[in-house]
Image 1 (cartoon, rainbow, N blue to C red):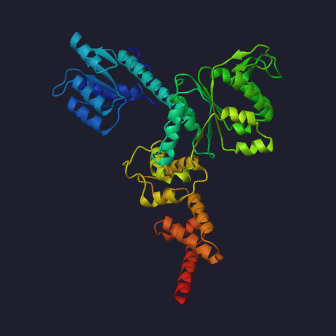
Image 2 (image 1 turned 120 degrees about the horizontal axis):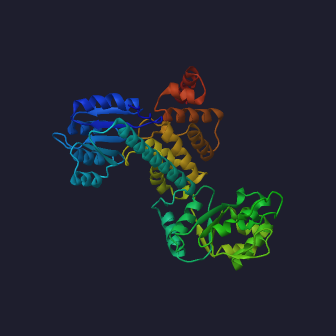
Length: 460
């Protein structure tokens, strides 16, 4: 008999359930030879107990077993492991059993006796579907990452005001200018405007104006014909055409050179674009949302930004508050960001009080982007939830120290030294060896400084 083809690497973990002892021994021997790992169970109840203990990729189950039949096992498996693939085996096939198996979304149906080659082929198809599902999940994850989170998190007055403005302007076609510091979530607001608009089913095309090379900006935005310039071997569709019917988000609009500002103004006023090297114009229907952290009014005074363009893009303005202006949102934002990386832990106890205190007292010069980086670091470092102050980045505590120094007025070098020591000991929950390691000094040096500080305190 021809040996079944071996499975590819990273094959499945299979749960086989059948009350026939000869089949149990056969599968215990042959499935590993095909490249699969297998757990063999003599009945349905034992199979369900195994499902409760560990994850399986595929359930290969006999339909007629004492105690709990195959259909009941599949139903229980769906409750415990919704993603599991199920294959039914039976020596008494009927229309009713086939329908029952399909109703429970069984992958396929095998009639006993069946050849090993048939089982190997079927499991190969199951494994292929499993790999496709993994690839689809990975692609969806990459797509979500590329598009960014579309949820506005926060329930304070500042974010309520932003949501109110979004709700008012979204149904219109008015241009929107989003202002705010770097990292505060301007693109998130732009996505919210698009998603709540009548163009939500059309493209949202983000463009970082500050990242485009000056000699390629026009080609990127409006496209070019073949041979329009050296290196233009093929024609290119511009991003305005890509966004036709939808929204184009021009991030960091203040970084556009003056020459491009004039061309952009014309497009915004007429809706007509002309590809580089082409004599014909193309009309596009695009809503424009812009964002900047720059002071455009000051740039107008300095002559680096066109006043007429500023008026054109600033039909409706939304200011996104800095994170330090909405500290009440930090706990819920931190929990939301943490759930991107960790699913363990109780939702109401993801951070220790000490960690939350540090998050709330920080000034967040990098805004939500900085918070996201801090949370990701902590999620990786933390072995078990909740996240503690010791899981926050080490340089995070040093930034806190610099803030305290700025706010405390004149002090001696010894005073500064003791603030750093006290902070390190607090961050390490009183563990002085760990504090010494963090400060980069020996434990003996740390004790000498603590003793000197205590003697000075008693003497004073």
